[in-house]
Image 1 (cartoon, rainbow, N blue to C red):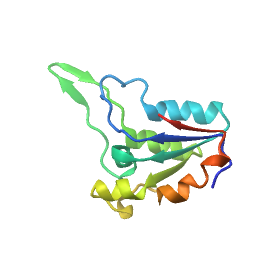
Image 2: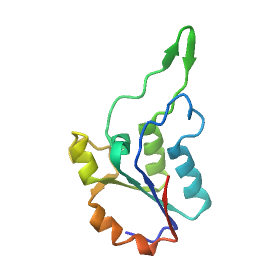
Image 3: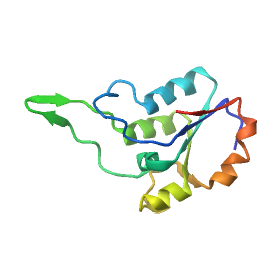
Image 4: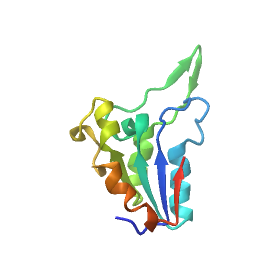
Length: 128
């Protein structure tokens, strides 16, 4: 399971779509993966919904203006395609009202105790 340089943990999803439209935490994760020798990603709390298969994020309209907002599901699919391992906390997923059957392909449900046993194998465990 371990063997990557870094485990990144994201617990809080949706931190102001307009404010982070050019650099959200999943974009930062892609940079960490490519620059630091690999990344595993654990989604907890409200961030587990990033891994739920759903429709694309619609365009945000403010009067006559369109604001491009991040689509966390698209970003997560890109991370998976680039080799990032994505785990979803099973308790947080259950609290969100979703089951493992609703996850996008490639995301895996794991218990925190199982994952925590491997933390010592990483060069760093970062809470983003």
